[in-house]
Image 1 (tube, helix red, strand yellow):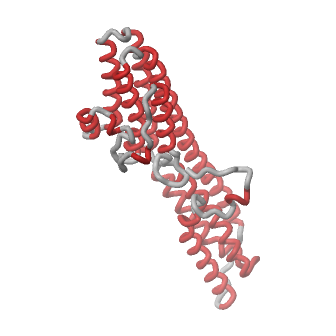
Image 2 (cartoon, one colour; image 1 turned 60 degrees about the horizontal axis):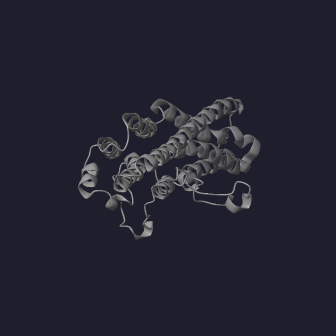
Image 3 (tube, rainbow, N blue to C red; image 1 turned 45 degrees about the vertical axis):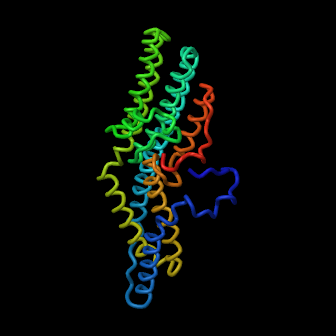
Length: 299
């Protein structure tokens, strides 16, 4: 995610990165070239102008479709952020409670903390279609970490390991059944939040809606020169540039943010969130944090 100051216009007004200009430049350039050809044909060969009423009505309907598209996409983006906010809160609550109740067994507390810190990293990798347990992977029990990475669902394997730590604490008499149930509720919440993220990732915008909107956009932008050429002449070309840039840009924004868990410039900063969780949990549990840059790549 690109960080910026919304009050400073000039700081980002001319930025290319993250503005989707590259993504839509081909479509916009094709519309502009087509508009220039229509104007040239109209003025030198044969009049091809048409009444603008149809485009006025179509533009209203298209605007409503685009508003719905971006609104739905932003709702998915914001829900994803709320779900990851829940992951932050529940990991903190789990280790906060464990730091008190497991104070008598520092080794067990450290193991639970490391598995808990690994959960968001495993969730992030799972949402991106990769595998990993984060920078603390080498601190986990080697055999258990390898088993988790080989599991069908890595994040769920991590959650099972977390519950295993609570069970061990219960067997040692460190916590009661009630305390174990309370702490395990945090793990259940983490699994629920991950399920919500997976629902967003695996449920794209309905195919029919996306196809119909794009067809309508293409028809509107490529027939727009015919509705403007008689009135505007060569001004039609920059006018089509402005309209196509606006409409294709709005549609591409919806595409960009509807899946917020990837690597795009406008996606959620999941690495930063995971690193924040990592630091917070290790600090609460009193575990020395190794510098991330010193860890092996690809964890």
